[in-house]
Length: 258
Image (cartoon, rainbow, N blue to C red; front, side):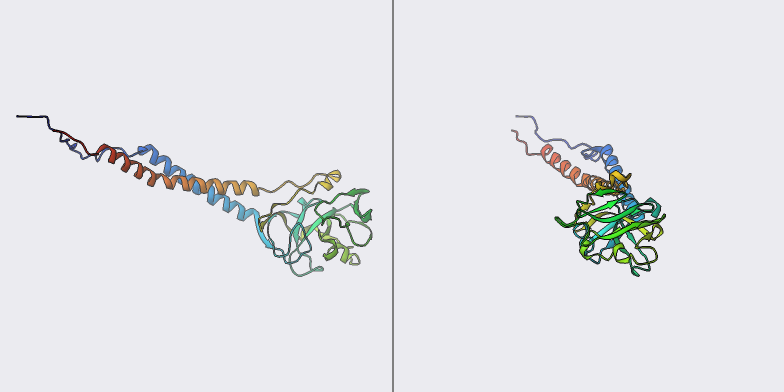
């Protein structure tokens, strides 16, 4: 007495030519994602290394904007591009034989004085400085009117009571000012601790244009996007293998018959 056989016949090729989940297109897209991710990731880091310089601020003269020991990223700029309100890194031999970080409050041609009801005055306009410690005046004591020579900068620390800045050098030949050429970089962000981008010095807007933020946000976006593409592309292989194995188990599951 005969019956139908329930034995399955294995394909001659053993299934070797069966295309894995996602197929060749998926593998190519995976490789492309990894390659593009590497370009974005490494390109972002390279761009950041060219444009920015890291500094560790040694003193508290810029508190509360930047505390002692904070790590900042400063964009390499030409001194001619510096504007009012910028926080800059500079080196002047008459001040100290080391890089210093201060805020530019007046540029060449400006007339600066303090204090008008506890506030700084530049070119006859009272300057609002919200970055100063709450409730503190722009200076602890008045200083005489200073006309900033062309090509020079007048700089103050945000911690006015504890900052060796232009007010401490008023008797110098340059009247406390620093050459634009002494500026190495403009601080864009505090990266350790991760306080982020510096706030815009809006109090100086009535005197002229402010500096535009550097490309730090774009650099970070490139690095993050690159890392995401690399991880996604690298994860495709293991995911495809697991999916293929699961599919194979379903297709070769147990069968019954007479």
